Length: 145
Image (cartoon, rainbow, N blue to C red; front, side, top):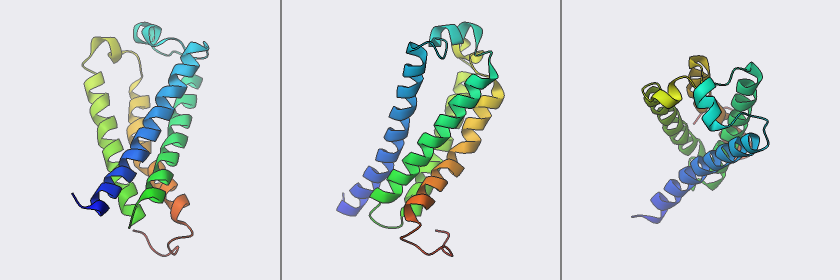
């Protein structure tokens, strides 16, 4: 495989896994400190407090912006193209995860539908913002890709 291709894959993977690790890490921290109910309790009762969802969406958006930023910074060329690929991957995986989650009895009632939709809808714009923040000094403001 060509060195440039490996760097491209690495840039996208770095943004993806950083976002994933930060999100799961904060989920675990919030559950272990009692701020959020445990995953098991969420599966049984769901998260019945709207502020849980607002906090969860907020930090997911922030971490996705960071993932887009990292991807753009690590991209060997065309950083926004790499960011777009990451955004598409994230959107598709969020969509698949939410569809599959509706068919698993333990997770079906854990999250409301609007939360699942919000995760899908915010994935691409969030990663795009991160990419634009990373490239604002690299490309002119008139360039879209």
